[in-house]
Image (tube, rainbow, N blue to C red; front, side):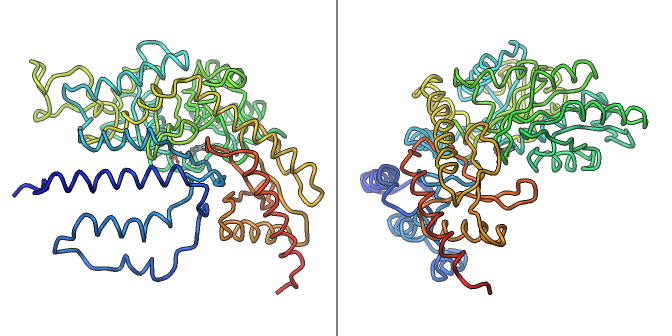
Length: 475
Ligand SMILES: *Cc1c(COP(=O)(O)O)cnc(C)c1O
């Protein structure tokens, strides 16, 4: 009844072909469109019913090559600059394969995949200057890590009773900049605190949280009988890349006795780039830090991380005894560190392996250089924009994100239209955001494959499409 192949040599040949196909894909990614619209027939192919009968692996793989691979997101491509997406690496691809073969369940038990994750925790603690008692866990991404941080801070503020009785009517208040990522209000919602308990504090001209406005908001809440408990700092705001003054926030948090969580989804990893790391000063005083391996570190999706200074508090937030899980006498059910005590997932894959391979194979210095390079490219794009009269820079370029627009009548519609046409052209894939209420073209340079020529292509295509759309009669 085994599902293993009858013919291992044939499986081996097919497997090698599949691996080679993916190497070809990555090696020659420039020859493809960044993205292409999905033809109706392709989308329709996924209406096929439940497959009751088997299909040969080679045939399913042909379908993958024909129907799936050409219509992927495009973030492997150097012309992809939308949102904040990592480009992946061939090393990460191979590590994913190894993890698939091991099929380890990293919820707990005594096996070395858990030690790999523990080593990642120690490495993260060392990089951010956290103590040896810090804890950490690999998660799907920063959205999950930010939610975990809210849950841990909630436990810290209300004590263990919150696990039995919930938050009740506790008048807790939290603070973030108005430029914080949307997953932060969502985390407040999901944690039962409600989005209204999050104060979105105004930002300054550099899109950093206004610290005086923050202090005023905390004072107003205290005067109104609220209980401030949690301060979010942003290291790498999603719109502009702005980094809050983390040292000032750490001081406010210490004075006001707040849990200080840093959303460093991509920006926290600027710690690896010597020329950038001073911008994160203060992050070493955070209570917790969330960041993604799958963005600036180019680890394949998905892999995020939460680092917590007070490992005991982290564990107390989630750990639950269950008789069927473990025994302390040793054997496979032993092991001192069970990741399921540090989160919601009991069964969890070996995500840590691809991050571990990436860090070991490239080393933090080289990874830091690729991070610094994306910021240098952003400065280059900024200069291209400033030198081009038809374009207008819309926000300071703090890290690796450039917000600009094409000048013209009805600029919001014009620029939204340009971005759609850019995607359809297959040349470049920036995204859009709102800066001061205006629709702007937003290029986030995250991919390690992106080069100056990709930025030149983005600008040229923007000018060509912008000229065409601006000349078209209004409809
Ligand atoms: C991407 C991002 C997130 C969300 O992270 P995911 O890994 O997509 O869940 C949160 N905050 C910031 C600043 C981000 O850039």
